[in-house]
Length: 526
Image (cartoon, rainbow, N blue to C red):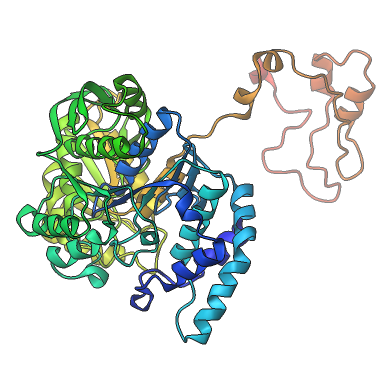
């Protein structure tokens, strides 16, 4: 598995601007025999919320008995997180087998690109191709696919969406997508295909973005479902572990649906997922509210405002831009009552770092700046410290470059202020990047003691084992060992203590400092 992962991740990055075309993906799908036509597709783009919306849509489809495929990015801990069948990421063995099935066809594409003096397939293109092959092989009824970056030239855009979801469009990845929200929106509407349904979430730059989306939908004769018009979050109320919402969609109204995630933005993600699921699930009219509730109340979205510890509360979030920071802050203010919240932040060099920190500054007592494991792209902690000092001022910023030490520093800070020792009102927020979130999940993952994996009977009735023969020291047993091994009654005896020889085993050297002797006063042994 490690060898396969290295082989794939060593390929060119999808961030290379010379890779902005779909030639390689179209060629490999030709070699595959176009398996992408064998299933329905929910395609999800947007600056933020793609992963959450995709997972929610997949959960709703699966609750209806459809066989599902899910392709998301980036991965937090393991590369095979990106491809899931029926809600379960594929195993290491399946991933290796999948690579072995497609690698020769990938090599053919690479050879063709050499002839054209063009780049080889990027690692994201290879992973996308593997996902499509796996979905067709399963086979799945519906594939829910998250765009990697942008939309128009993204590797996933070889798929023809039945439902194209466009989440909030904001400033991110400007080096590749453009320096204005209009340019970025023009890239993202590239996933709108003829006669599909376009599900549009609330847009932070509505006046600039909505005309672009509406024009693209009209050109493709697509049906528009806009949040706030054709669909709506009618009510929402915070609840334990998430919120309770009432949704209105083109097919009906769903009352009191539990959503197992915090924040208003997650309610709108859930609405978009529900509208997209209505498109691909073969049911006339509204879906069954009980099945929708079952799906949305149990969906797991790692790394998105995810509470992984209590006492103190530890929250991790992979958001890395201003819009994500605004959603994170709103969710924490709505659902938590912190008197002290210490941030642990590591970010990439190409992000709007000062603006991101500025949004979170009012909710953070102190900030520990650090670095994550992607050293090539991560901003050095010392540089991040200088930016944080501008935002937070002296006395609220601590620089700890090593992430494990940074997390421990933050935990120590909140523990020292927690007089009751129960963690209430004291928390740690680890954020700034999905790499940071993934690193933190690995570091803070709770392990299960091996005994707890045994059955009750196995724990109570341990298998009998013969005691091992006592090892000899330097090949010779000392007198105490010989006495123990040969004594018919090895129970403790005072005589054994008072006749024992105490030395360091070195006949030629002095006794160890402080070693006991026979003549030593042993009154203290009582």
